[in-house]
Length: 74
Image (spheres, rainbow, N blue to C red):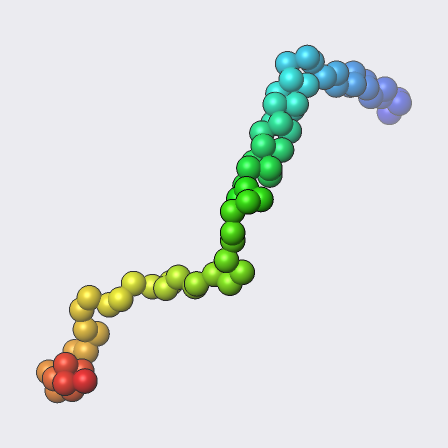
């Protein structure tokens, strides 16, 4: 078997459109970073109130009538 010469792929060149899209994306990231925080003259609470992760149950999980009566009596 002879030496098969592998053809080398041409280097990828960046077009003006790709460079413009990257610059636009970087600008949007910068705007989100700057405007993500509140303005400096607004007072921000130091401690936040945790939100309830699951909503209050609207129905009982009890299956027996005795347990349901005990739960309603509480």
